[in-house]
Structure formats: structure tokens, C-alpha cells
Image (tube, rainbow, N blue to C red):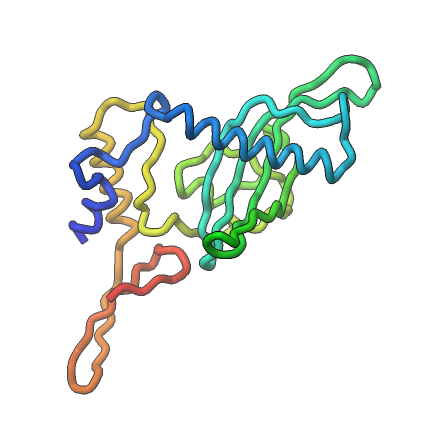
Length: 213
């Protein structure tokens, strides 16, 4: 288990697997903004929202991948400007939630939008998929309009780097290691195959009920 946890905590060159907001690259931010802009453009096209009536993307706030039952989903929060319903020249800035489901494999992947709606920043149902993986500020609809996030699951092997603004590496590593050890708590089951015993470890909190020999 120690080797697995070390691989989750450190890159091969010994650097800690931790991303800070200050170290995020402009290229990554640009790609995410372009992805959400494409979602907004598609929404405008599907709903015939043209000119002043179209949603206008402002800020990308949160992004969280979720894996449930071997299927990948993405939860996103962003703000967009919309024209007021009174027909005047005033506009308002609203918070939106989008859930995207990844379909297909390799070059044939598709992104299916399963939920696209405005949300209230003060309300919303809790999402285990976002909370368990550190995106506690993600805002969701207050109804079951989205599919993922209802299971008490984590990202595979907990090996995805976390965003953090802390400069205390030692404190971060200790906290992250404690969480990983909790995730990898296991029960050993002895199975006899052709006279030879094989121990199978069941990791109770790995997504999709994974089994590891």
C-alpha cells in the first residue's frame, strides 16, 4: 500500500502531485474556457437565442470530473450574462450548472450534455462526486436533473492532483496521505484455487467496486 500511496502523492521526479492556482497554465485555462464556450454556443443554437437574447459566457468557476459505474461525467459551474426579461437594455449575470457525459472510446468520443440549467448560488442539492473529490463550492440544481454525484465514490485510486493555495508541503502531504489510507482501507478474503491460497483485497471505497489482487 505504501508504494501505491507514494505514487499518488509524488511524480516520478519526486515533486508533490499538487497544483496551485498560481501554477495553472494559461493554455489549460484557455482550453477549459473554449470547451464551455462551445457548450454555451450549442445551447444558444438549440434554443434559437440570437443577438442580445443569447447567453454570453463570462467566468468559468468550477470543473470536476466524476467516475461512476465506469462512466465519466463532468460537472461545471460558470457565469453568463443574459438580457433581462423586461426588454430593456439591462443585463444580469447568472450562475449556470452543466453536466457532461463522456461517450465512446478514443477518436470516437462524444460529449453528451445531460443537464444545462441556471442555479441558485444559495440553494442546491449536495453532490457526493464533487464533495468527495474536493470541489465543495460547486453549485448544483435543487432537483435530480443531473445523473452523476449520487454515489459515495472517489476518482480512481485518488491519484488526481488537488488544487491548493497552501505553501506548507509537509502539512499537505500528511493530510493527503491520511485521506488516501482511509480510502484504501481493505478487507482480505482468502480464496483457495487448486490447492493454492490467493489473497484478494477488496477496496471498499474504490469506484465501480474495483478488485485488486
